[in-house]
Image 1 (cartoon, rainbow, N blue to C red):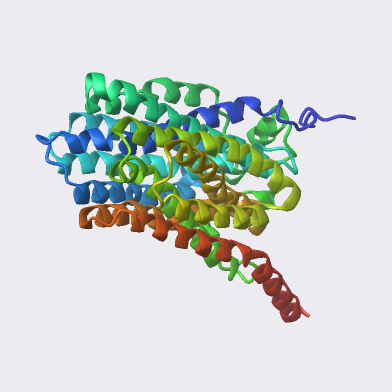
Image 2: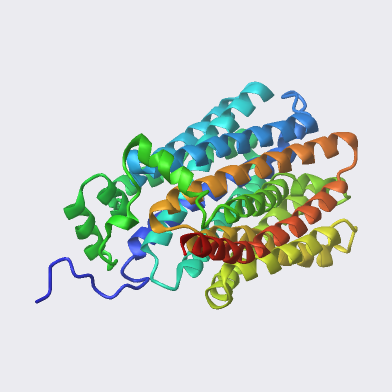
Length: 439
């Protein structure tokens, strides 16, 4: 006899509504993150505003510091408040931050707006990733992660278009007003159409509702072991589980890889247009490099997702980190414009998906009940790299050594490759140690 809760075959088609809503939310996330880099040259040219290169780097770091706090908070509050309210709240907060930036009368107020935006941006990514990983068909988690992250780069390209077209015609403030629109567009859709996580529902004692959501989207029946423990003690237990015997060594390696990946992502997103401009390229060309690197990022996510499902996200991430480092070193040279566009594009192919595959690797390291906390901490601790990247770019720009930024990014790529490559080795050693202890 077939139960009413027996799920239909699990496929991308059955979970498309969830995936589409998360894709939209992350699209606006990518747009808001990249808006600052896209308009920075225009703000620096607005001499009445008084923004210096050093201030610009500090503001970029305040953005990512807010993201660090948002990511850590979201990963540990999701079982209490639910993923749908936190996703909608994250979009609302970063939209309000963009509105503050549009109204800013000083660099200090601009920094406050970017910090507020960072709080929302940081919370959104780990929640969106956790939702997609939970709803993804079995054996297609890395592909689903890569597909979701294409939205980030589509949003980055949209920000670049706004920086190239709207900012010169209507001023840089108008671009930040565009960054406030997600609260009007995405939040109502998330509240109305996005389901709650079956694991979170089960943790909150809503077993019947959890099974109904699983059946509706073709998911396996939620089991008690897949649910995060409820309450403050449960959230603390989830954090302590990240350093259990099985993952004691792999957790710091994932954090280090995420630090390197996000230092690369946010350092390049914030400073690439200005670095290329100081290297002798025109304003329009310099901003267009941001579009090209995000276009490469979309291709990279599609390629990396399929490759990771076949070869494993750890191997793909390690190779991608190395190739990113090589691309960063090539950008130190003033190459012909066409060659530079090609180098920027292929660097984008590797740059963003190297970090995305770090996220995908957490799926094999942590149990289902620990996944949201694990992702929250991997993204949250990694945000320290996102703080360092923009800050370092500002320091180097202020001292006249912008080209050294590409060397720093290359070193981060090599270090990230080493860290992620060690994850399976350390995991095997930990498993052997646990087996010996239990024997």
